Length: 384
Image 1: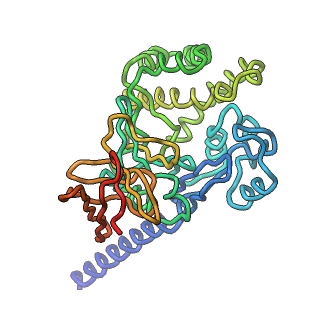
Image 2 (image 1 turned 135 degrees about the vertical axis):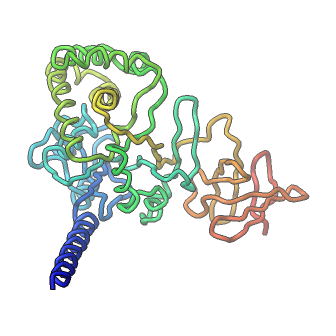
């Protein structure tokens, strides 16, 4: 009798455990457990899915001139219809001309509550997949994967799947890491800021850190003046509590800095008006590195992926140019006799083989093969 009761008790406990586990998995995968906000400031191919939410930065001032000039009523209407704005609830939307994507970050911090949260740009993403088929462009101080803007047109889930930007790929990383960010640009951040921007802005930010967070001041100076670089793009995926802690710290520095320099901002050129976005990248690096060194923050660094149609291949990158009646594009040569498209939305990657009589065979990843003949220099045309 005791044995039967024990078996019933164990069975009940096991069933309850399975039910709780199932409910937890359902909660993670069927609710807003993870939300990544994609920041826009102008009409562009729409990135929107179960976990991706487009948000317009600077919606409250969209009718005023921007880097792109003045938007038409049709463009403003498209933005209003297709995404949320950063101008509801508690917000700093009106500062977007100076803070750029950080007005969206502020809105996300103050007005959302998903346990895991991220922020991307409308044409920049984190690439979690080490084996993505999109070409990796490598420069002395950085590298990134190139999508080509055409991959975003007629949006589908395919490129997100290839970059492994889905719940099933993203969430398991948080068993071993606390935040996912772009790989650093390996340069001296302080010297680079001095060359490209107004260094007094960064010096004033450091002075605010010295006064408010004296324990971080020496570390911040050392980090910014080392050759380890900085995390670019202000992109991340992380736990809610980490975002809250970082944003509290960041805006406790940027708000008083804005009060110090706001009178001089309108006279600056367009690029230097965006000082707070550029400062944000450097301060993001200081915060993460400090938390890593003193509180064990676990950082996962990945390349970012850029969707663009205005890049040309790096000067030393081997490439070929392919032409067909349907499309033409530059293909970057990879390892193991592979080539990958620079901008092409139709054919991305494949293995190439040079044949006699200046012919080129490409076995595409989709299983099809194409034959090209040499035309001029690095150019090849599809055989008729």
